[in-house]
Image (cartoon, rainbow, N blue to C red; front, side, top):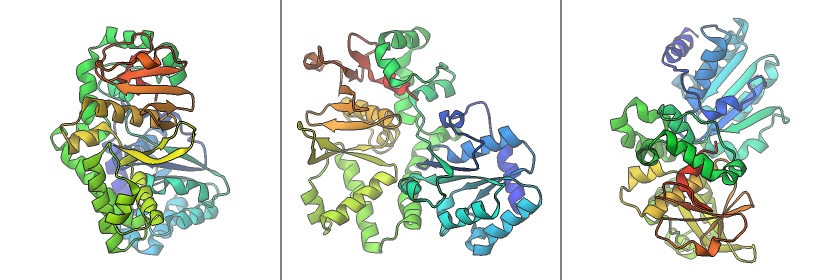
Length: 396
């Protein structure tokens, strides 16, 4: 037990409360069971530690336990550690990397039942987010997703500009005023360029020179460590998974025909769709299925790296429009729903249509269309229904 307290105290010493992610204000911290989901590197651990430091300080009421610790490979160690923590007056348990602990859902359920006056907060990867509705907690848990840093958060973290989130409806109604307010305060162009390259992950500031290497390590760990810990697959399927990731990264935003994929990887449609589900669950790619003019779904797709930092890390040279599209899909997906339309436009929250491009494109066809906007990468300010794409990063 002393070892866990020592680790807890050492980690808290390094926690800075000067900047807190958007989710820290949204979580209902008084709930008894809370789950935080998110891709690797987005800041789940920091969120847990900040909450402990802010709410409990040096008190032993709260304890941080990383379940990837080798000691928890023995099944009895977790229950024994929690028992000691509870008997010593602990009432707030923060569990990190829970997916690395076998049968973690059942383990948390047992702790939840055995200690009715103890709060449990846990962090898990996106790979298990889709299963949260199946978790046997009788609807008693509150589940949240921590996304990568928005452009608005990056402005605040860098000390450039402190803005409250602007809901999308409000932003589109007043986008000219909002963008002008930002440009009156700062030179947005170089800051936005920096965000596209390294602003999505808070760990950049720990060691900027090592950022690209660490980001690639996170991607590798998602495939080599997290995926096998959660999904059962044999070595042959695992190899195909890695080959598919490399192929999608090279060909993005174009997406191979499903028939080509099933033939290349010797899988049927069901197996291939399962593999693609894993790709999306890891938080490395977003794959959008095209919606036909009649509203149905076509058999064609487009794929996007999850954010522009991954693009910059893997491929320095990409078309400007794809940078803008990737940023748009990332930011909008993190605060709403995004559909890809048959003509290449996007529909957000089933209400707004966006045409993505650069200043040289012709946007005449959406000039008089209701709730239609152009999100332009490379345009400094709003004109009519043309919005600089960076403004859509202010919504969360």
